[in-house]
Length: 493
Image (cartoon, rainbow, N blue to C red):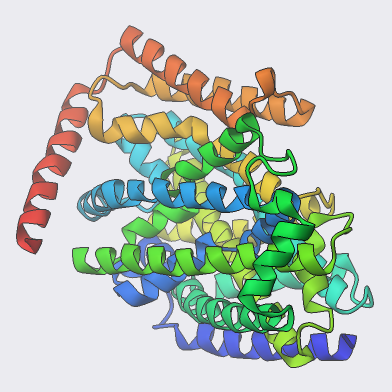
């Protein structure tokens, strides 16, 4: 594709997104709740689209398609198990929303700090989230870099694509905080789902229709339709990839923080139902993308180039390829700006806000805005490393966040959990996961997520039993959520 057309597509997307971001402003945000949570007044449909755009990023049409290209139908099982894990949102979502309303939490890690009555818990879990989420932000930037360079036949360099995505993420985040992120997310989610659906149907029709499509896969690439198929998805690999995804909705703070923003319980339910519907459709599309690339381009060196190569081919009309490019770019940027927003709120609230002389809400907000470009630059630098297989790197970063899961679950269900247990489990298990990832060690063939989670559970339980719990707060927290959950569901029956 002519590079000029690619730039025109990017320009159109930028103009429309900026107009929407500025339109979303309702005066200057004066406090942390308004800037980072939209004053907890987001409607269900907008929240659903934003939640979807935040979750289904470049990982899907670039990463999951690449994983399908490399490993076949096992990638579908991998993603469907993630949907099984989404049931955790239905279980924990109302609890997050209730305590967020009652105690005024801005971040999930602030919730942990208050629940375990420890500033150190908030600081440690916030910093751990930053360490593991910045690489995930880089994954999104990498997706945009691959996309723009491939579609322009390398006239637009990988670095240029990453730079453009980084700048846009910073701008969208700073304009109006969560309001601009949510509304641009909603716009981007619609672009993602409509364009990707249309183009994948065109590609399959040009490959002979669904009948011929699957017949070609079964005869020329039989491993693509079986598990483990080509051998990529052995049981240890499959479990190592899926485990972090099962707990994604509560382990990843940029996702769980969204549970604080709906204006009502009904809006929360609409958000979750809309997200599940969107995600199921988008998953099938990504899998079909990967299969299409496997049929048309069976010898790609880098599976992550499956979607960009397909879009640049004669199978896709240039104008539609351009629109899909915008959709994928929008998906990636929506995730980046959501992560940036969440991490900046955590650094401002849980790290800077917990210094000896606690700064005012106004000063925390100012500090959070300063942190936004710093986090973005760190993600940009990490993206320049150009790691292979986006989907695997995405799971690796989520594996690190698994070590905080025991603390989140125990917040609502185990009164005996302690601050010492949280800190010990997160620090020791997080360091162990980082070591396994850096050395590429897989004990008995299983990835870092499994070992990190097991170690975190053991340490959290043992240390908690050996130390004194915050009895009054634990009692209040757990009993409040238990009684309020009953009331919520009685009203909806």
